[in-house]
Image (cartoon, rainbow over all chains, first blue to last red; front, side, top):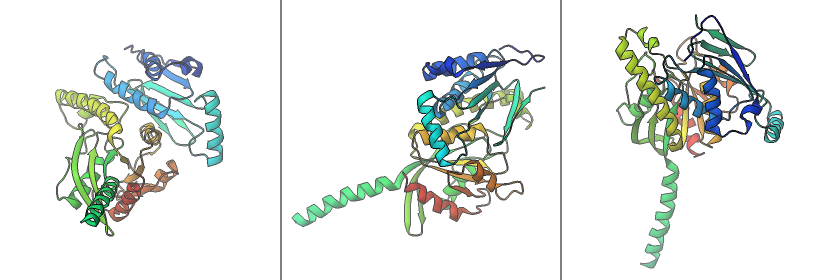
Length: 128
Length: 213
């Protein structure tokens, strides 16, 4: 795994890049970038079962890939904590265009120490 | 004679159906050090007199799935028979150096880290085999962690009934309202598994959860 403490690279991934991939291929695409020491900003989000698989795959890689300690992950989803009617509208939109109304941040744990979040803000705490 | 045979036949069918609804496996999920084993221990001690596992201040004390079969719970004349499934804490990162801070040696820390990663993989696999889940959250911590959101989202996708427990309400920093605000669609019960605080409400919620299985 690449270690570059002086440089922070954010890699933007559009939803289009993963939209047509199978679940495992989506996870692989994301983790391949994370393993190079970059923070992935994904347009959209994985579904919750894929998110769990991402954690599972990540844990399987810890100890196998030198220097890899896992990931820090956060999803900012406008669907969370909304009124029932608004959630329903967003679900309908998702059915048409996929899960792109969100942002997912995934970074290697060796670079991102913590992602602090509350409903209104998100903070990336970087490792020294 | 014929009436007795018919009666026995119906009794068997209905009792079986009834039993099936009252016997289920209950998973304990959540981040490390939230108090999953403490809660499972509390339930086991209340109803069987035995514990399910050891607890520690060092994260990832539970690194293997722990079971307790046939735990019979009685509340207000109703009975439940549970298989308790206590799982390792789910995390997205494991760094052996974190364990060094607790006075562990390098080798011991590395082994613990290795076992913890395997435990998380196992815990996620077990999501396929539980009928209902108690998600245990540390009420003194920020509830908006992605691990909490991902676990609950996954359970909803699998249509597994969920009860959220905000643990450690005996501590001054505990904020059950924040947990409720983070998960407004779910029932949240505040307890202290360590001191057995508010367990009555927990058992009542557990019976409500059983009704959804």
